[in-house]
Amino acid sequence: MLNKVILMGRITQELELRQTPAGNGVLTFNVAVDRGYVKQGEERQTDFITCVAWNKTAEFINNYFSKGRMIAIEGSLRTRTYDDKNGSRHYVTEVYVDGVSFTGEPKQQETQQQSYEPVQGSSEIGNLDDFEEILSDDGVPF
Image (cartoon, rainbow, N blue to C red):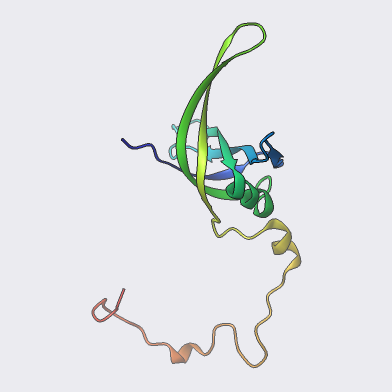
């Protein structure tokens, strides 16, 4: 059997790492994922998916991601039910996070504060006369 979920989207709220009574770290958060298609004349739809990370994965996400940041997640889909105090049954579907990756998006604070300066004595691109145009893919190792 196979249960594999891969998501890439933006974190929708401030993260709060919590501890279980047994001392395990747990982080529950939502990721906004845009759908890949738009019906003509309508706006793009977005799904808000609840994700749960545990222990070291939860700590990593809490330390390196924040609200509004793009995140790539790999995990599995889990369902559960519970009855509230009024006796109503609720069904919950969540992604349990097994792995997380950066998406290449720079941190928002860094992009505002950081400026790029080439290393002393080098140029950013170099002299364009040093480049040779390749007209075919023959001999290219990739």
